[in-house]
Image (cartoon, rainbow, N blue to C red; front, side, top):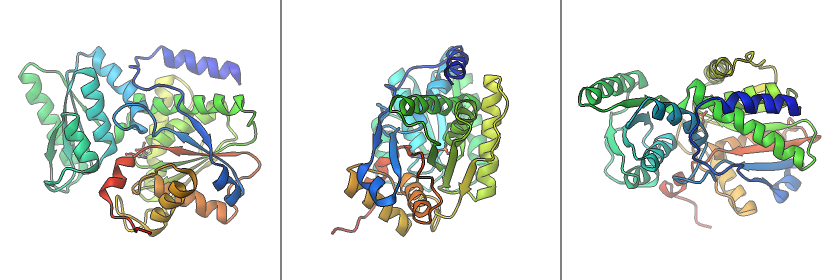
Length: 336
Ligand SMILES: Cc1ncc(COP(=O)(O)O)c(C=O)c1O
């Protein structure tokens, strides 16, 4: 659909966007796992997005910070868990653009600096531990801090959890268009299945909007890292609606959207046995690192679906690697 593609490109290029990533990210075929699982399996390497150790949040931040810069923002605030990838990448982007960054983490105070917490510090962010609480409490705290900074002559923006905003979600409409072009260039025109991890649902929502516009036969399997199926599906649909409104297109149908919460394991950011097994399998058969909070669990969902025959083998399956790899340095691993 070249005319659809150029229409999306035109729409998106009229919106403010700060270039942070070298695009396109690689699309690697994983031959050994393809053979083992009976799939034409590819990994879209959004862990290789260039700055701050990479990850999906950079595509969202390209749109979020562009608007912030137009509004003269000099300080970015955001929130997430103790090992938040979004917080780490917001800190890296703030450093890159000469802004200050304050992180309000949903965690009890931690003195050790490892994984993303270490990187937050290296990127110069100020870290505040808010205790384990509801995000509405942290959002209120960030809103008061924004007012305080503004009274002191600064301009500050509180970026929501996971960068899940309408403009942020556009980052993954662009990513779907990029993937669609890469597959077409390789002659992979069969029905596409995309598998992705779901946190706030904004990444999946962008893919859903892109797929509805460019390749409506696409199946999207979203493997939850945290929320139950209903909550995540609802979040994906509302982010998709917001992004569609920004673009001025109809909200996408969700009949080819499958959301699974069967691979969360003991809970968000807690390792699951099958997630660990998936990380080790991809590391040892492809030399690619996943993480245990998001992508390892998503890959365990992909493997389980392939093994019970619910993934299509008559078209490509693309696993979106959303990053998160600093996580592996915070875990204990079986040495064998
Ligand atoms: C590595 C990684 N993968 C996936 C996700 C989920 O993305 P979203 O919040 O857009 O669903 C996150 C969110 O924090 C993440 O850090």
